[in-house]
Length: 408
Image (tube, rainbow, N blue to C red; front, side):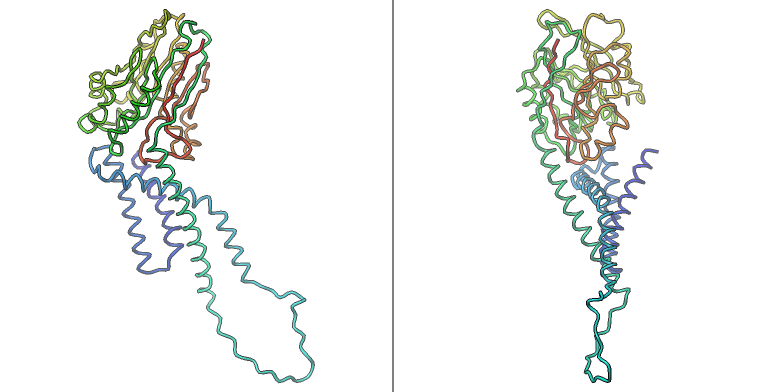
């Protein structure tokens, strides 16, 4: 069902682009046919790109495929925004053709016979040809504005997505926190998305920036990879160099369950790299004589692979006098966490919307898009993620590594 909806949306977007970028800008003929077939090829490129990312094939299509997806998306956005100005301009041009002389411009004709030599007026073009010219002018002007805007936006978004993540310092006050734990610092990183568009340098940069924070705990909250260990193992090896006082911890995201071999092989690989996976379990973080419970639950998508989140296993039977920090990939998981008296949940998943205006759509699925919020009396911090998924483009949501400090 999801696949059919996706294909339908892709087809609808390209049909709209054909109307505005091809039919409205060309006359019937060879050029229009060539551009039409070009759009058909781009539809197939999009489908092949997504299919290849899931099946681990056609990896060479990733760059052109995902870049076209970004350009296509912003072409549609800008063309929709231009619909009203385009309509106004159309009526203005039509009314401009209906010029009626004012009384001051009236011509007085003298009485009596007057001999005047009048040159024949040129024959007016047929009304259909004139209307066609106006349509082409508007269509081409609209397409040009949308095209320049889309390419500029995608170009800017690429520099942001492929650049250094922003370090976001955040201080969170937990009312019941042991004062001895005040000042405990977490380096929070999510949605690294190692895949065909990222290289080893992407991981090395994130590790270098995390180590520069000198955090007490490193928390990787899901969506680390978009492929198998065989495909991406080399890209993950820099994680071996992560430095922190009390260790690095990981919980699964939805994309770990999209890989062909499931998350199991990545759990083993991360264990060898010195990153501990919290699979519906908790550990004690002892700091300056105080104790904090750090828990982690699997992603919601684990339910389809007999690996569902188990909050009772991760949080049940704990000492209620201790504060608890929960790692859970999706912010919406706070609805269950609230039943167990969790003090703070750290999540990712949303990418902060990644490409505006997707940030306006995220709230329909998740309670928090990015940043710190309180949901059901539980504080939730949602990081925008350090990588990207799909198009290597971020607009209005720069990549992020969070330095989160607890305060009593």
